[in-house]
Amino acid sequence: LAKTTQPISMDSYEGQEVNITCSHNNIATNDYITWYQQFPSQGPRFIIQGYKTKVTNEVASLFIPADRKSSTLSLPRVSLSDTAVYYCLVGGYNKLIFGAGTRLAVHP
Amino acid sequence: EAGVTQFPSHSVIEKGQTVTLRCDPISGHDNLYWYRRVMGKEIKFLLHFVKESKQDESGMPNNRFLAERTGGTYSTLKVQPAELEDSGVYFCASSPGSGPSYEQYFGPGTRLTVT
Image 1 (cartoon, rainbow over the protein chains, first blue to last red):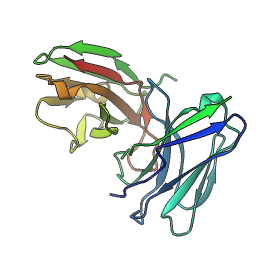
Image 2: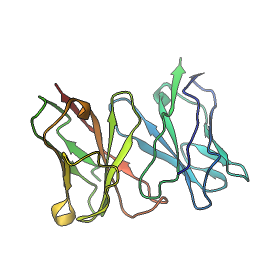
Image 3: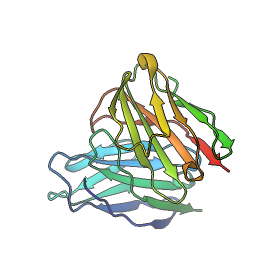
């Protein structure tokens, strides 16, 4: 099962773009890359998923290079409410495999 | 549409007692998952139901844990007898289908404290 590595924490300010990079050197051919967000006292919430190149939805963009050994979650113009833990998940098929996540703090 | 609900939100029990956690998935979701986060650790998978059948229970820590999903609707997770190391947050999730392309919808979790 692929292991992911991402920064433990990041700080940003309101209105800035935040990029969180995750490395997954051992990703398998059939693995998707999925990002979840978790607020305190809540369960994780799906943000975005991709297999290759770029995926964009109303919340974020996901950039995946050709070798798929890393991925970058991009949050445009963050607000205070984006303060949360962000998890990069790879592999596991039916079961989600969580790492430690990146704790993002957005400051006024 | 109602989301995944879990009951209770918080439970405090003594070591050796029994606790039953309940999860109500989103209506129509055949797939139901249990996860937990014990203190200071990462969220870990416990098991996966497809309807009333256990598809994967590889994450269940030991035989003190029993999960059921009679009728393929809500699920219960019983811990008997509870130990101190069982303290943590237990999450339930559901999805309409199996596989990595299906988003899992999580409930708010049940915080279990064993004293």
